[in-house]
Image (cartoon, rainbow, N blue to C red; front, side, top):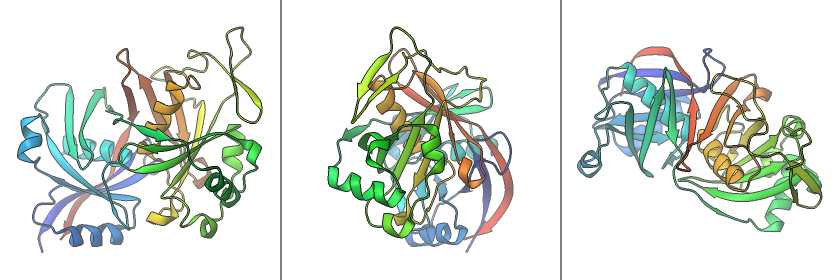
Length: 312
């Protein structure tokens, strides 16, 4: 066993202990899959990551480092808050990207680009595949979440590495009032994320969408937030008891796929701030922006709360 540098980082927050904690082992070289999984189980954090040199093929494509991402129960091909938190830790430990202003991370999903805006990092949302879930499954998930059918405006399977079920609900208040039955939810889906959007003010160019009932959403500029505005216009919660996470404080991978879905369908503006973790005493903020080329970026602040060594 070897002493290894270790950081515990709070992600999607400027204020320590109000975001989503991440354990980062700064050098995972020589550790087996079983040893990584055992340590992730022991930390009992939603995710723990292990940094490694990039593979030769990835290095040739510009990768700066490689990351492996573990929940207490399993390894993930990609996850958002581990991507931001691992990059924050790598930079803080003296990592220097090959290309100025851009960091390239290798993970099981592939290569993920990150950019810096001051101290805030943002990752390029990976490619998304989405499909419509079976109505019977939606009904079972709704019952486990305590939802009435009319409160669900739309549903999609969202795959950007991990596969999550996404539900668009009728309001931010509905999202905040959920009291899920974890036992009933377990075994139904790998994870389910729910989102509610702040009602847009009435305007002549409202886009009216119907899903069991007519509902109006504003144009892409309605409710848009500036980069320095923390006021959320989207409320998010995420539940994944099957991977040992009853409710995740902030879920970057789900927010990424959610943004791609909602922006593509004209439901959300090209720039907004999402809140997550409210119901469990956190104040996560996720900064979404779609650039002129159509790439969705998912940003957040990170702060290091613990720094030292672990013996592995």
